[in-house]
Length: 167
Image 1: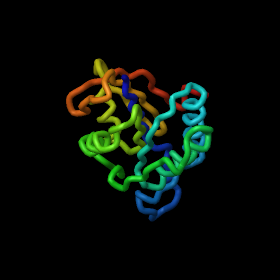
Image 2: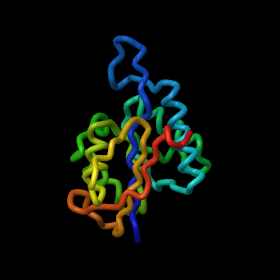
Image 3: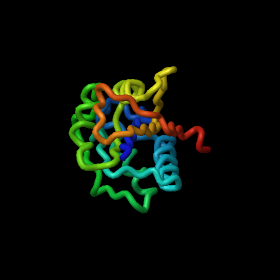
């Protein structure tokens, strides 16, 4: 049985408020639109994860809240917000995958760069070119075995969704 890993970078941040802590930055209007677009695409194409784990930073939280609103199947009660995903490194993200992937066929992580981009590039086979993960991009990676080891095993990038390509 295959395992699907959804890796998403939070939507575009709003930098207009001076003196706001990085953790507390919200998403801007473009970010709101993009998060909704990704949620609509996921619903229309039946790519819906069983588990969602998100950074608890405000911009990541807002991203997943808007994404979930677009779905009739996903619920905010099912989202786990994890403060350890705030600016998590690739290794910390892999630990999160190991922790949450048990007993499920798919999980989604919503986090930040550079960790999320490094993780996508580490997990995808073949890594013929660098995959850039800009704001609100969603990478869906398939592993042929649910028992994969994210430190060693590579998966196939089956979709890379970029909001600008959905317009």
